[in-house]
Image (cartoon, rainbow, N blue to C red):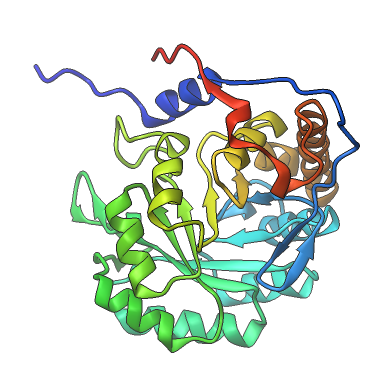
Length: 298
């Protein structure tokens, strides 16, 4: 019998917990968590995950998530959903990054990019890790088949829009180099919460991708991040900002937009405390050497 693989989420959480943080106190100040991104300034590098179907969590869940995160000064990401949902998210005043699946019908990708442009989103991108399904071969979502993207197609799509273009699902130096050569303006380092068992934890590969891209492209991180301390570790290792999923979904379920706002603010407050305790006056001042590798057991 084939030995069962270990969940990537379990490995990722264990890796996060294995990272230790030095304390540095002399000359410390109360830090700023402000982030400037794609020409706009935000109160925090804590962002929402690229979530979908939150109507099952709370009425008008995606718009409520956007409203709450925006009130906290955070970037909002949007996954699958009808056009009117994206319109409601942007109408809330949120700065939204729209992520599109790699539809086999490439005209659907172009249509969704055009709609995102018309809505006035902050940026747009494609979720490249959703092309395959372990049971069916090519993935099918809501009766729409998926198909893997090529580097040439990514380059073509990047050129097709005036918006900053982000690739979600990068987890290797090879893909990072191809994306950089294709001209993308952002990458999400992610295994999509375990689409492959035993996947490399995003924070393990992040420094290598940062080196490969020479710090010229904003790198974002998701997967298993829950606290301000988690976010600090990711920022120290090279992330521009971090997406939080389940903790914000739980807060949405309990108290709608107000719950999301409070959760983002609480995580940001925890991040600021960690920055203060490591002599990091702002996001650009976080020293990578403050994070050390401890015992990694999973």
